[in-house]
Length: 195
Length: 158
Length: 267
Image (cartoon, rainbow over all chains, first blue to last red; front, side, top):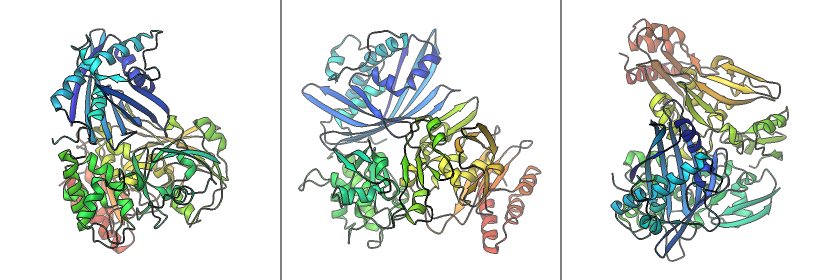
């Protein structure tokens, strides 16, 4: 399925772009995500813990930057993962496109997501709404990361992406985060969407 | 050399010569004989496994290169003896295997393919199969099995 | 068959990798060409320098209109890249013909170039695109054109202590169209003949690079000039085919060049 999300950060374009190319830094800004180690050349191995109500799921896999267009400020990523306990899998090709937005940066994220597995199926609409709601968390953390705040913006051991908590949270207005959308997609095991 | 490899979700520590092929390590050191060895030069596809999610020729990788990586073999496909993977069920239903020698390689190549390209055309399926050789079936039932598995995975039965 | 014994190093930096290269060592990239010959014991390097953990060699980026391909970029990455699909479609077409998906998952751009098989697709496409090959050693660095880099069968200008680190590709001329065609007996088999063509609008140079016509990728200069002068595709193709000695391959090459030219919009 194809997801599209967007958000703005109050940080200059170049610095935002460079930060988004740094996979470990991006993972630090995403609750529930951890980077375990470098994979083979250019790839990172990591995990994602997600929680929705009583359901928890953990995915392990790899993430890599596919390609970078420095002229257009576009980057492509490839993520793939598999449930630690279970048969669900997920793969995503993600494209981020940046443009200046006042003194800050506007980020559009396009995700092409394929998922298999037998998790509970919730509607695409719900997935999109929650993906939208998650952006606040990521964008806020990313902004702090970009400002170089001392407080660790990233996950501590045992932290999970608490989807329910985020939906209930005050940051519902900001546009969706594709990585959260991916996490939700992984959790829900939504099979590939007929386009 | 000491290596630590995650295979089908389990971590294995072993001492291997650098020249030990991944295919031989899986079969002889770990006893996972589902992965078969055909040509040992990357053409037949019988040895295909997944390393960090990508289908690769196990005969063209050294075990030492898998240190710190996650390898997945055909043994991981079925949830348990009673519950086969949709691809396995489809192969069974469509008679897509006879001697079965090539089958593991096909399954490991096709698992990411049916996930990423559930709407693939017949031509695209045949192109995706080109990296695995079968001497028994003539490929028709394999193509049918791919279609069947893709439809089942899309339908959400998982 | 199994390979002969060898020492194995897996450096994490380019600097360390360069330190390890000498006359007895061989660099290991994707392994899709090297490991088969080692399995057959046709090659017996005393030491293998595995580049698969040198993260700084894996990148694919467009900067100021030029494409910078780190040598350890996987062929599958080239295939999936939107940057490449948009601005260098010839590369995407060529890489789709490389082996099979399982080969492309491990095989690298740098490895394919350093292996220098004259029937390999990427060297031919990169030759048509006037790519530059950046080489490093402990002693320094140099940059080679395709004609300088590819020397003969399975031989490049790389010295034993040198590594190809990047392939750099200039932008295509505005309005240029390209096509890659090849013919192999079976899918994924080594191609018998092929061509990478870039048909550029009048006034800018076109390119025709031939696969399997010689011991290296071969630019058909006379055919390119004829194309630029407005000759018909059939005549241009015949000029290109004339470069091939063997009768069958000449006919095959001529037909493939004509097909590629048509696909790229030449009449």
